[in-house]
Length: 369
Ligand code: M6R
View (cartoon, protein in one colour):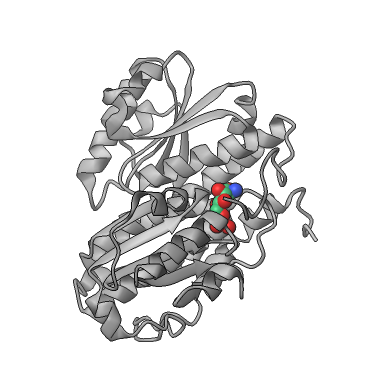
C-alpha cells in the first residue's frame, strides 16, 4: 500500500502534483472564472463580509498564514489568522459579517472544532477547508471546500498542506471575483499560473537528490534555523515544524527582518540556516533585503542553505548550498518552496534512525484539546 516507497510520507510527497491538480479540478472553468459550487454561502453574503478570520493548528495554521497574504492582497478584506487553541479563550470579536475559515486535514481536530463552534455561536459563517469527507468540522460548518489530496497516512502533513494552499488561493480569488475587487490582469494571470502549478511541483520533485544528500550530512547537528519573508516566512515555520516532528531537532523559523532584533545572536560557526528567497521579480525590495540577510549571517559563520528561484544569480556568492525552485508569482511560491523542506526533514529523520510515518509522541488526528 506504500506503492513501492519506504514510507507513506515519501509516497505522499510524490503524490503532491496530482493532489494539487485534483484540488483544482472542475473549479476553474474554460473562461478562467472560478466555480466553487460547494461554497454554499451566497454571493450576497460574501459581498457583506468585512473581515476574514482563519483558525487552524500546526501545518494547517501555516497554510492559513499564507492565505492571509493572498486574501488581503486580492480582496482588500482584513484577514486575521489565529491558532485554534488560542482563539476562543481571548473573547475574539466576531459577528455575522465575519467569515471564519477553519482549515483541517482530518476534520477532527478538537481545538479547531471548539474554535469553530465558538465562532458560530457568535453568528459568524464558517467555511471549512478539509480533506476528509463527512468529518466533524465540515459537518458543523456552513460550507465546505474539500481538498482532494486523498487519504494522508503519515503523521507529518505534506500533500494536505499543498492542497490547503490551493484551496485558500481559490477562496481568495473567488472572494475577489464575487466582490468585483481588484479583478484585473494580475488575478487572471494568477488563475492561469495556478492551473499550471502542479507541473512545477513535479519539476521540483525531480531535482530533490542533492537535498537528500545534503540532509544526510547534517544528521549530527542539533539545530537548524529557517528564515523567510512575506509568504516565505510561514514556509520557514513549516520547514521548522517538519524538522521538529520528524528529526526531533531544535528547529526554528524566523521572519528574516527580525534577525537583528534578536535571533542573529544564535548564529555561530557552521550552524545550518535555510533561507527561502522571494522572487527577484515582483516585490524585488524583499528579495534584496533577504540577500543582505544571507550575507549578514554568512559573515557570522552560518552555513547557508538557500532556496531560490531558477535564474536568480544574486544569491550564488552567498549560498553554501543552493536549492533551485521554478519561477512562480510571489504569492504562489510556497507551493514549490515547501517541497524541498519536506524532503529535507524526511531524509534527516531517516538518517537519524527515526520512525518517519509515526514520530514519537504524535498522533495523526488530535482529538483532544
Ligand atoms: O488534521 P488537522 O489539519 O486539523 O491537523 C492539524 C495539525 O495537528 C497537523 O497539521 C500537525 O501539525 C501535523 N502533524 C503537521 O505535520
